[in-house]
Length: 343
Image (cartoon, rainbow, N blue to C red):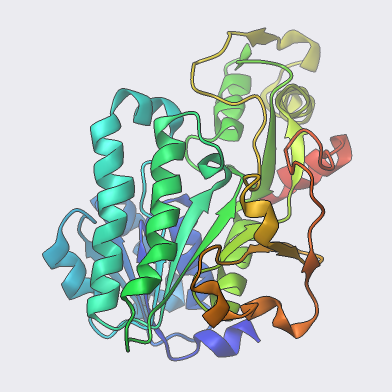
């Protein structure tokens, strides 16, 4: 059981006050760990996180710091069993306008966290990644791709250490800060219009609880060097906007017909559709009913065997493009079910 795995563990969550990081902290707090250290450079968000923890507050340690500070990371990492590395710059336009800072955070910052984890002989290191790391067109996706490759290849540095480094990769998370759902929600509150870049754009979509359950399950089974990919349904951005108008407009005193959708055009460096893996990765991808696993691709894979897929519940994936435009789409009912989770 997942709950047994995390019992009595000391856990560090970087970006621990963010949308994903804070939910990791909350869920872990119910699984009996010894201590959860939430590291973040947002003091107010850290304060709010610990204030909301109620009876679990005593096991959560709010650590103020930045992943650019190697000394702070070494102190934060002492005695840690598991690291969830969620700290990152995540928004495509911000990374495009601030590319040096995106590299410092997503690449050098990840290197700093990995180095501290190896120095402190942490058991498991899990990088939280994104489908935008696959065949990236923009700075954000490229830096996350490099963060993935750093994580996987840093297993070369293990030597006699116990540290196992793996990644999890998933799509857009509903209601996370800066995602399209809260943006649409605020636009509906104001009476519209809802602004979309292209009505034909598609995205993989999941809720924050789904994402965090996937992260915790992956950390339990990882052996190092894998990339775990969540199986997700897709949504057409135009369908999402129309469903949100129908669902939320009456709550704010509007007739759904009053709120319009405005197409504003491409912001630049955005894909029409997202992909789960590259064509090169496809040769190494296995699946079960819930997840895909990308296995190591280089010569050392012979020493790894088939790792987590050895138990027989996984099979080789088909040789095709796994895109948000050719997987199952959420229908209106499915989108409404997601709204129940985010409200």
